[in-house]
Image (cartoon, rainbow, N blue to C red; front, top):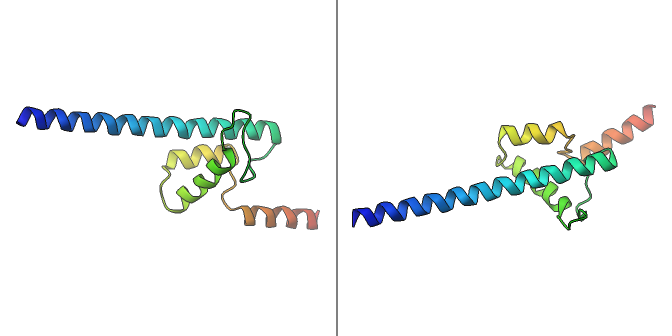
Length: 105
């Protein structure tokens, strides 16, 4: 009975780790797509409905990262990696700053 419980706990841990690993792989896949977008467009302001050439829903992924950061679901490492590619956390503030820079230029 105890061996069965240990086996079940091990299987649950393995599934949880596999899920976490899969989730992290997807996150890095999204980051890679974002870097490609930045390389091609010169900025990280991805339109919400933007799809990458392989049909990856990059715009939705970007939106979900903003939400995840807002509710504290991103690690410091994830935030740093997104910052490193020029991630736009607040679209309205970003657009206001762009408009202001144009105005004073």
